Image (cartoon, rainbow, N blue to C red; front, side, top):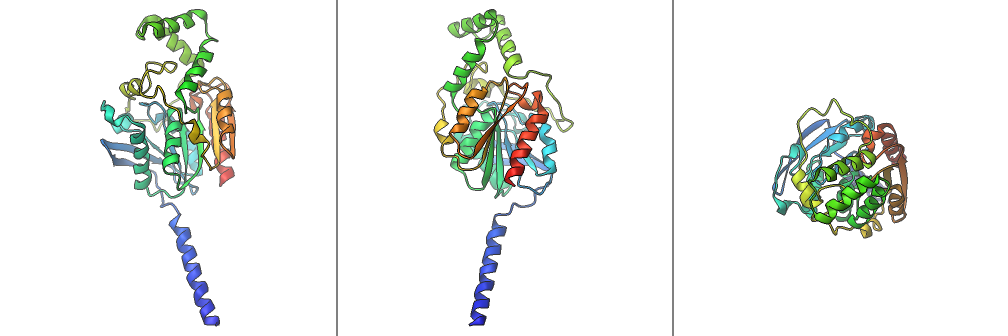
Length: 315
C-alpha cells in the first residue's frame, strides 16, 4: 500500500511540475527581429531581461510607430518590454494595400508575434488606437493575458468624436470656425483648417516638447496613408473605415485586472475613461497630470509610475 501511495504521489508531483513549467515563459533576452505575417513581416524589439512577466506594447495610429515606447525603458528593470511596429509602418516597412488594413489583420499580427516568442504569461499595453488592438486581441486570444493597461483609450469613434466636439468648444472661436468650415466643405487642406489642427494638437495631443531616447536610432516613419484611410485627416474628424467602429461591449467581457490611464487634458477625456472603467470589473483609473494624449512625453514620470505600480501589485 505504501509503495502504491508513493508511486501515485510521485506521478502527481511530476504531473504538477509539468503543468507549472508548461506555463513558464521562455527566457527573453534583449534582441530584435522580424516575424512573418500575412502581407509581409513585422519588426519587433525586446528590451530588458527582468524576471517578471513581459509587457507587450501596441502603438497608436493606425499608422503610428512604437518609437515613443523607448521612453519606458526603465520599466525593464522588472521585466522585458516587447514593442513592435504594425505592418506597413515604422520598421515594418510601408505599404498602401488596403486589403491588409483590417482590424482582424492587425490582431493576427499580434498573435503571430506572441506565438513566435512563445509567450505564455504576459501583460498587454496599448496606447490610443493600440488600446483597441489590445482589446481586440484579448477578446480573440485571452489565454496567457494576466492584465491590461489601456493608455489614452479609443474604443468607439462616436464617443471619440463627441469628446473632440467638447474639446473644440473650449478653443478660440476662430479655431472653432475654421474646423466647422473644413468639415462642412470637406476641404481639409486649407491653411485655416491645418492651423486649427495644430492648435488642437498643442492643447490635447502633445502639450510639451517631444522627448527622445538614445534607443531610437533608426529612421522609422509613420504611415499617413494608413492613418487617413482607416481614420481620417485629423484626430477630431473621422472619415475612414473606422468611422462606425465601436467595441464598447467587449470591455464588459474583460476578466483580468485592468488599468486605465489618461492625461488631464487628453483627447480621451478623463470623464469618458472613467466611464470605460465602470464597465470592467477589477479595474482602476489614473489621470496623468498636465498631460495631453501623449502622456509619456508630457509627464513620463507619472506615466511610468502608474504602470509599474499596477504591474507590481499583480506580481
